[in-house]
Figure (cartoon, helix red, strand yellow):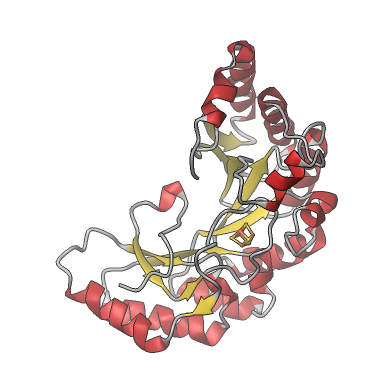
Length: 293
Ligand code: SF4
């Protein structure tokens, strides 16, 4: 199999088999990101994709029915290429039922609603989209390369096409004192959309990121652990879209999940409990012990 860097996938996609059709990230500029630094963005040659699918087809290991496409945003590829990939997956691996991938918000710009619908019909589902926040200042501060209007425009197309997706939220992204604003703006955006899940990771800084250098230069102050939990409460309190809210990423010192708005009170109560137990430094010790994401 051809992999230009280590396999990166959300925890809930652990049961997939992996296939590389792009490597690296077509954007590669977010201030906090540590991923794909060992591989520049590239489109896999078609003969490599074919060879990898032949290898999977020949393997007796078939305990999967979903393929996860490697790379930060393989959905940047044009419609025709993605359709060809889906067709070849189904031809070579007929037991595969669905195909997932990370996607950037901007990856949908070059596709119509009809094309997105056809991709959903071809098996693409549960794309994980790094929305991160709905706050325009923060999106620019973190060099995400889009604004909240773009999120609303592009993800509404994805919803209209019936292509399911998970939105990622980065807890604590704004740093000290900015949590409420990020929560309010993120709820504003998600309430216009239909993500099947909002998946929370908490900002965890590593030395090889520009944002870490900003911390050293006194230009960014990390949010406290309690501030982050209050930010999540604010977000959950404002979410009106029917979705799953899940904080189970390794970066979360507190694991909480529930359906919103149905289980809103239970999620907020669980976060209250975590805040009440937080005084002994256990949350800070947890974050300090994270060595990679
Ligand atoms: S956060 Fe995602 S889009 Fe941004 S540089 Fe990292 S992989 Fe690329």
